[in-house]
Image: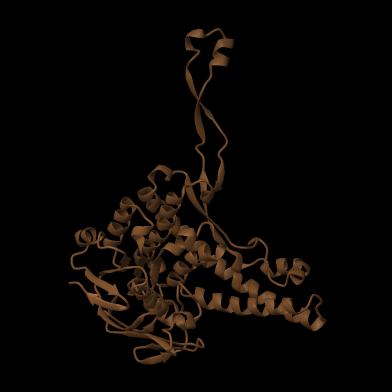
Length: 408
């Protein structure tokens, strides 16, 4: 859990130094800098912003670097410095480290913000990242496999873009890469599939709270991005000509996806008066029978309203925390946790603008029962009474034109 957060030159936040609690409420007008506070925590954890990937877009004007430093409750310290040219310096306990994943392990962050509310309609990347966040924190072997796969995929796509006709040397090189991709893909799929199966019951519980009317109709499915019954290198070889023409690799782990399905009811009531009349049983002509109808299954995004989709996406993200935190109860999973003591940090950006009062109450009451730290931003102080009911000693901050002050 973050005890102290220091920020330098992030957008309009010139210098920020604050002491945080288990729950932190950041209140301010649009453009005041409240979202930038959450952005700083995300940057420290993930090595990138959730608003813009280019550092020059979030480094303060006329400045060359942005720095975020945090002291955790176990006295460890994390720091990241980004330069305009994207050069990055990472430090853990005053020692330079060279992989962002090291800081990510120490500071797992879960973001719920307005931009994520379109996840169902966007491409597969955001939904795939949703699963990979869980897998990264629960399966120690996942990240090295993922990094190796991405490196080979980049090499393969670079070659595919260069030419439509490969030489014998290039074909041999491609086959070697494909074999490597296939080996990594099998392990990545194994990790993803296992965590996905463990995630489903938590998702069902979350849906039962947020969308109880659809608890029996909403379900998750995972697609690997390729036919897992056949080795990936075999499939890549079969599709090589098409990949050459398109200039990229069309199948593999990088095309995996999470789908949310909506199923219709499997039965319906129907008045069977015609059959009763035909048998002369006029007294029972209006009897209501239940007949079986085909189950209709389609993407939930095509059926639910805008408000319902917001609740569904909130359920997706909210259901991840109990799984991550309760994983320690399983001996075989606990042995693979990268950092069992790391406290997840939940970032809620302007949730009052996206969710109704009932959904907000369910979301916050659920978070208050979990061993996680919360930073939430809001345009007004309307949410403060509920927060004070749920957390014993929350901290309140007001942001105005980049200046942060405690309202305690």
